[in-house]
Structures are given as structure tokens and as C-alpha cells.
Amino acid sequence: MRAVDVIIKKRDRGELTSQEIDFFVKGFTNGDIPDYQGAAFAMAVMLNGMTSFETADLTLSMARSGQVLDLSKIVDLAVDKHSSGGVGDKTSISVMPMVAACGLPVGKMSGRGLGFSGGTLDKLESIPGYRVNLTTEEFKTQLKEKGIVLTGQSLDLAPADGKMYALRDVTGTVPSLPLIASSIMCKKIAAGAQAIVLDVKTGVGAFMETLDEARKLADLMVDIGRLAGRKTVALLSDMNQPLGSTVGNALEMVEAIETLRGGGHPDFREHCLHVAAHVLVVGQRAKDLEEGRALAEKCIANGSALETLRVLVKAQGGDVSYVDDLSKFERAKYVEVVNAPRSGYISQVNARGVGEASVALGAGRAKKSDSVDHAVGFIIHKKVGDSVQAGEPLFEVHANDEGKLAEARQAVLAAHAFSDEFVSPLPLFYE
Ligand code: URA
Image 1 (cartoon, rainbow, N blue to C red):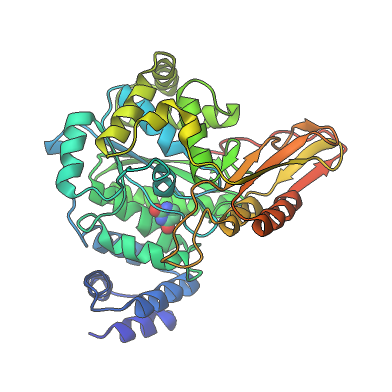
Image 2 (spheres, rainbow, N blue to C red):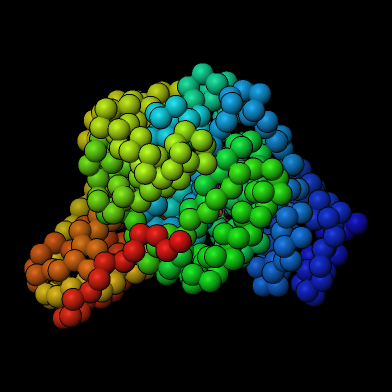
């Protein structure tokens, strides 16, 4: 079999066999198939799609590109949660400590920024020393001893996704239903959690812009999860405007930690409590959402969720003093408050526009080898439905370069729209 023939078959809209998919994934993982063929394959899939059988095969091959953990030997029941990607989405950093603090073990493999969407690993790395490359042995030991792990793909856990994800980020091959579904679900399957909550985003700042597409992605991932014997549920949540009030790695860490302290933006807190409640229900710690939510609220109020974050950061080598002293997070050289140009109601804060502007500031990558600037990003002061007076602070730009700051100011101003009429706030969840 030759890699080029697999690419040609997909280019010509053929349906790949399990053997062809497995051959490609294995060769790509071990380096026999170079990045340029991996990129061509991703583009062929992006343009021509895959059947649900092909997507399930791709997911399982990618999961098996490394070890597939069986966590049932380590803890009774481990849970996992994953977002399909969005702007300002630091949910895992707040929700996972909440859930683990309620006594439910959490073993999670996260991703880096992808296109205009931020990534949990880049955010966590704004804490100096925090390691996102745990080995499988470290993953298992930490889960058993600490009850919480938040790491990235390693050489032995879903390595095919690690390589493919980095390529997709810089080759325009992110918004593809089969590539997203397989990328998310191979990590979930390899990491071994028995119960999974998927937070599927929809809106202009999501890879699946319409509710219909998001529902398709959710259904596909739930089917793959069940096929792999995992209890899987999916929520459809809004991503038309950034989640919470911050966009950018260190700024989002600060908001996630403030939320664990009982503060944070009300939208983000509410989003986290709802996701945490679902995780607690699928993880059988709560009988229903009401009880799950009450448990999550209690873990914030009694400080145990924050303490669990400290435990996590320390276990993964991070400087734990950052959790208690938020002023330690790297701050950008220039911080500019941009005021509202007019009075009215906010009718749009285009999440895609804000996400792209944050990548341009340096918070994301343009090339695979780029490093991210943890300090840059935005604080959004007004959300859709808020009323604003001309001259009131609308958002802040945090930048390390004056030229980029000016461009970001323009871009984020253009992402805002105003109305003279009352505008209803956006829902947090659709289904
Ligand atoms: N999250 C992932 O892990 N993969 C994707 O492709 C998109 C979001």
C-alpha cells in the first residue's frame, strides 16, 4: 500500500477501508509518512468528508496509535470532558478541579490552540513549570494518587492526534466534522475514562457554526463513544461571543482561577456549573443535575475546588504560588482600555473576530513551530444584551507590540455591533 494512493482515493471521493486508514495512521505516526502527505490527507478529508464508518475507523486507529489506558484498574470510575473548541473557553481549567473536588477522579488529555480557538494546554503553560507531556505511567500514578490529571498527547497516548492536530492548525484543515470528531474521541478513548461529557460549541466562534452541524458532530461523537463502550453525553453550547470575559492564555487562567474562588464572570461561572453538574451525573456522583450543581457550588464555597487546582498544578510541576497570587501571571507590556464609540445595547461580540485578533496578537500559532505569547489577549467588558454608554470601557487589549495593539483594537472594535433597541442576552446552552 502507498500513502499517495490513499490520498488519491480520498481526493477522488472514495470510501477508505479500515486497512487503508490504519496503514495511513500508523505510517504517519511513526514518521514513514511525512507531514506533507499527512497535510494532503487532512485536506482531502476536509474537502470530501468521511462516512461514519470511516470516521469511527479513523478514531480507533488514532486511539490505538499509542496505548489505550484501562483506568478501571486504577479507579472505580474516571470521567473526562472535552470542548469542541472556542474563544475564551477555559472551562476545563475550572470544571475539572470542581469535579475532582467532589470525589470523582478526572483523567483528561487536552489540546493546544487550534486556528482561532484557544487550547487548554497553552493556557495551563502560562504557569511556569506546568508539564503537559506526562508519560502514561505518570498519568496513571497521578490519577490514582491525586484524582486529577490535565495533560496533553504524549508519545504513548494518541500520538497520531498530537501530530495531526499540529498540522491541521496551520494547513486550514480544522473545521472538518470527521477530523474534529476523530481528534476529540481518540484522545478520550486513549485516556481511558469510562464516562465522557462533550461540550460541543456552535456559533460564529465555533468550528461548527450552525446548530445543525454542531448537532451532527455531537451525535457522531456520542455514537463513537458508545461504540467504544464509554458512557457519553454531549451538550450544545453557545459560541457566538467569547465565553466569560477573557481571551488569551494567562488572562484566561486568571479568570478560571477567580471562578474557582467564587468570582469570575457570571456567564462563565454558570456555564461551568452546568457542565460540572453533567459530569457529576454521568460519573454517578449525583443523581440529577440539581444535585450535581449543588455539589459543584459547595466545592467552590468551601475552597476544595481551588485546593484541587493547587494539587494538580503541584503534581504537574507548576509553580503553585500562581494559584494564590494572580499578579504573578505574565502581563503584557501595553494594556489599552478601548471605550464604546456610542451608546446602545450590545448586539454582537463576534467570537471569531476576537479569536482571530488574539492569534494575530501572538496568543495562537501561524506556523507549527511558533511559540505562543502567554500574556497577550483581551478582556471583554460588555456582552451581548448589555447596555453601554458612549465612552464607557468596552474592552481591553493586552499586547506586547504597539503595531499589533493598533490592529487588534480595530479588529475587536469591528467585532462589536450596537443596537438602539433592547437586545436579549445569548443563551449559554441550546440542548
Ligand atoms: N478539539 C480537539 O481536540 N480536536 C479538534 O479537532 C477540535 C477541538
